[in-house]
Length: 300
Image (spheres, one colour):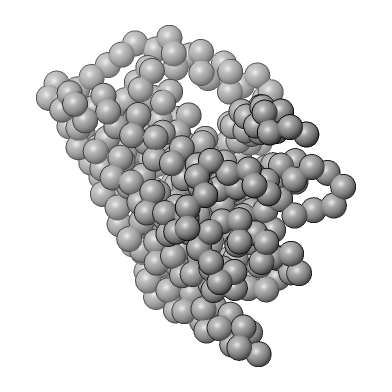
């Protein structure tokens, strides 16, 4: 298949993946598949009246939804969809993805502060506290995958899993990364920054209309991007028999994204302070153990 056709197929699959994530998100709340539901929700939000608070910061209020999506697209750019099919092949890509996603927290704080709303501010600060707590687990899990690949390039990370996927080689690292990225996408039960029942929408509670659409679209892109990151780091990326490389990537990514919502339906929602406690007291030591385990396996 030519490069142009490959990229066309990837773009179509990625767009379908975003709609699939929206479908699964609605299923996680309602318990049924409403195939037209995401489209109806988009049309309702698009026709919603624009409502602003009295004293909002004009620049940040307008820029925050765009920054949110831009940060997610930066992370997508360094993740490979197939062998040799990557937008930015950086030598330090493994570090870049975590550095880019840090700005998710920045955009949520900007959203809460710029709208001048109490619920938004609480949601933004919660996002910052969560990120600080689980970002160490994300970095350490990525470090262990990089140790095995002996490279921070994404293509090498996938190729290193040809003999054995990292989910089997380092299961502790996989579990840590899996639940940490769920928290990074603030999916249930880690949806504390945007809790509907508790904070009426949290960080983006004061956004309506087109701006709310941008936030929701960014959230869908974020979930799909983090599912792709799980696929690349721990599920062998494009590795698989018979089918084209990029098809395997999207099959795995779709299954991971669906599992996020399925797992979120069964896990109990925990308090914010308990989430931070688990992140610091248990996730960080477990991540250190995973690094030591991988180091010993490499030496042997």
